[in-house]
Image (cartoon, rainbow, N blue to C red; front, side, top):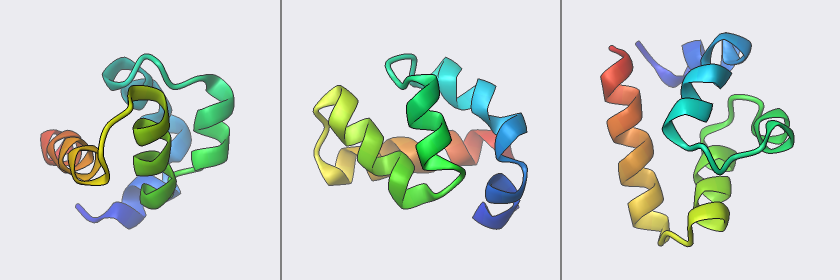
Length: 66
């Protein structure tokens, strides 16, 4: 699976993302709209993670979907 599938089915993935990162608000999820860079940025913002840590977490979450 590639990231385009997440983008295309964002409404279905929103619940999964909310489970993984509970500090993200519904408004955050609407802004992210399936874009990986936006997801990483919001995780950095809400959790105070460095860019590398946010990317690593998103990679681990994405790998768990496969």
